[in-house]
Image 1: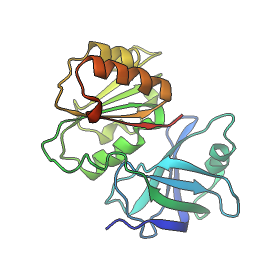
Image 2: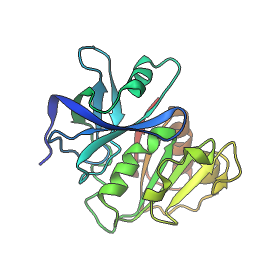
Image 3: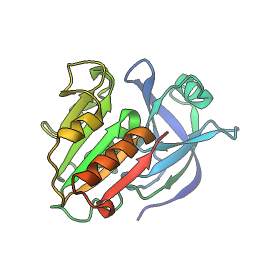
Length: 220
């Protein structure tokens, strides 16, 4: 059973830098149970500033992880980047229902569409249920933003790079979707920036995917 923790002080175990601005915080689990797709509120103890972060780790990992992008106008993202192993992190949750209906049918076809750090809930899903059928499209600027690419089965991740031709597809996620043949019986989940999601949903609808089979989680 999933335990919703109103408030917990977790101990930071590791800060893992994926790029100059994107990093992963790994911290003690403290008996927090969750479903892939759920998120936590995280912040520094003794402050009122907390932010929503999708859980990046798998259900069976002995720790919790969140994927964070440091942004110029994001004071918390800069402060969290400075904490060190042994420091405390205030955590609340988990919350949310994104992806919660995607684990019921083992034969269900799933299309995951993400941009930037919007890949976080899908990373959690893949680590939790590695044998389930999925295809993941990840939109980034350059190949170095393909976070933890080795965690996905070969052939099931499509990297769309908008500023570098070295990905699987040179262009935006929406450019790739426009050329993709769609199967109308699949469930489609989108996570990332609002502009990408808005444009991608329009493409999906024109390709015959029913609105009832499209699920979204907007990051910004």
